[in-house]
Amino acid sequence: MHILIVEDEAGIVQFLQQGLEEEGYQITSASDGLQGFELIQKQQFDLILLDWMLPKMSGLDLCKAIRKKDTSTPILFLTAKDTVQETIEGIKAGANDYIKKPFSFEELVERIKIHFRNQNEQDILTLGTIQIDIAKHVVLSHGTEVQLTNREFKLLCYLVKNKGKVCTRNQIIEDVWDIHFDYDTGVIDVFINAIRKKLNIKIEEDYIKTVRGVGYIAND
Image (cartoon, rainbow, N blue to C red):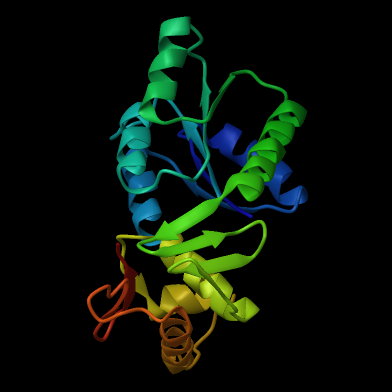
């Protein structure tokens, strides 16, 4: 699982990164809200640890900006703010959880596990007439179950999770194929064509569009 930490205190970032990597998580960090926002535009994260007080763009504003595009990725605020009103403000902005500094690392890890578990149990993705049950590995198109290979399923989920954003071929190769060196991205076109055919996507639906020379975008 890939976690983004947006925190301007270097000591906290180092502490969290070391501990969470030891727990088996992949970590990316940003030192201000604007940098965090730019990273989120470029790639998909499974969970975001977000400080409230950040330079350039506050954690609260960043949370609101994320939720305009992404309604499912868990966001946990890490903050010294602890009044009821501030907690409510954070939840209204779209945060899933709230942990007060200083905090126990063990408690943080358990909360992260809970959010991942809940996400796996409840995650139902939709794209027009297409419905994806991630936990059950089931895809329905026009109400009929469609059999996809594991790679096709991962690619479809990736596009739908990034719905509304252009996914470049290089991003797809890195995030879905987990290949981080030069590779023939033409293989992606073969998988996309297979997915379109299996889902019986009609011309007027056009849920998965090709962005010529760049990649693909999923839209309702």
